[in-house]
Length: 127
Image (cartoon, rainbow, N blue to C red; front, side):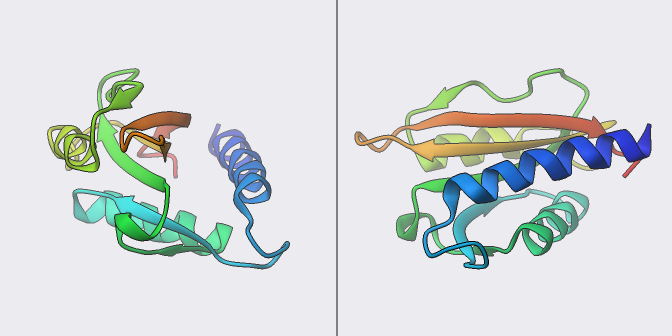
């Protein structure tokens, strides 16, 4: 099961990198990051390292990588009115003890709101 979760996440992130690459295959893709706890921050850094993503302030990119831990199947809504609302929602999850990691990618819309671009989850104890 651990290998399957790793494979699914790897394929998803490879697709994500291909979609977001600004300057070719090996260019670092800028994303804002929301990872409210120590474990989610570590997981976000691991994902960013594997996918050649770099963390930038939210006003320098239109993409947001969100990593949370939760018991829920879909802990975050599909859209938020602002970066602050998205960050607040991520902070309200069981980020220390939630049994599942949820990795989201949100894209900023022209009106400044954020919409979910993709979502995957996997058990925290398997990865």
